[in-house]
Length: 291
Image (cartoon, rainbow, N blue to C red):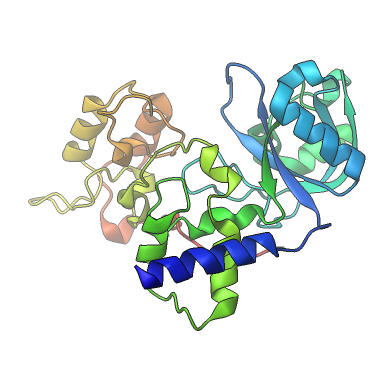
């Protein structure tokens, strides 16, 4: 109990003394029923902009001027990422300059984060490097360090005592590490849903993204992608992430549902052996390096 009390006291002290006046990040996502289900990070520095963003969090679009107009760059900063997706994968683009909040924008600026991610260079060429998504607005505050989520050691989408208990390299004598953990404590991101509440371990298998739903080679023919993988795909056909019976190992493109796209991936690698793969899947837990 003494150790627990000490941790609580230190956490409170560090949170209370954390730096102020820094860039504040906000989460931008669809205001109403999601059509795309993604999100991105918006950095703000001006007090009036921060105040309006907080009004949008509290009141929604009724606060007025809900649309974010900003310039982007096609480079990874390891902060802009889809905070709604499992693993919160970083985008290859980020907001470089906030312009203003608006009630409307030109149609050419309407889109969604995933669309920009699919061809950032093309988006910049068409729009001059601006975004102004019509159905997206500020929905939550991420704080001064939106990467607090990486202290979610048990991957349950919040930062609490369970994560503290799992921090194997945590050392009470290391006050730098303690401060980083403290600043993540009960951070606002915890309110955001994850694509999968518990991260599928199979997404770190070498060939899962190519159609390997069981992580095994077929016993007789030694094929990596074959009949058992098709059986798993079929058993999960048309299921979505909201279905508790969904097996995410069959979600080869990792978009939250099992459909024709996953079938196409499996069929493209049908009968592959390990030696047939030019490369393995990118581990979902890979570190992010800014560009």
